[in-house]
Image 1: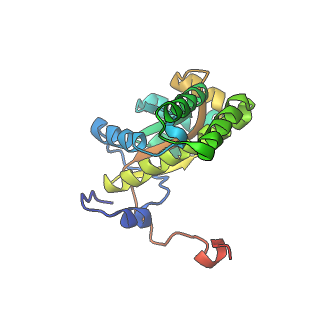
Image 2: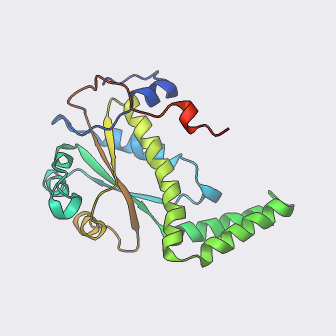
Length: 210
């Protein structure tokens, strides 16, 4: 996979695939920062931006990610140039949602029934249980991860989104605030091989409701 500065979004979507085999080439800090910048620009509900990221590049720590107690022995994770631990700041999600709603109302940016609906939504989120709050904030983090995966294609990088991990162990390994919740791991690096088959996806007719 080569870097292509004029790569279109459609091309990036078509070329993106889950990479589980990486070369030993290091991923530069500049490219990691470009991925984080892409995540930063992702949309979020009420502009809450609940995503928080921890970048792990230390080789010894990366090796640990492949262990049984961390990822159920997904040993290929140790080959990645970096692992981005993608987290949700749930308390920040609620506070920033409340702040946005207040700003909209105070400045008459949104009015009437729509504004009432936003206030009801924020109130519901603030009073929801921890599981529901995590689900809502995680949805936003997931969007930011998608932005990083597509930007990675343009940078000549491969990625794989990982959802099987021991959250407690990963937090300790990566020194992450216990108050944050981990949404997923994003393995990043230079692919060691190019897939020779198309994505296995359902047809449009299978997913488009009548």
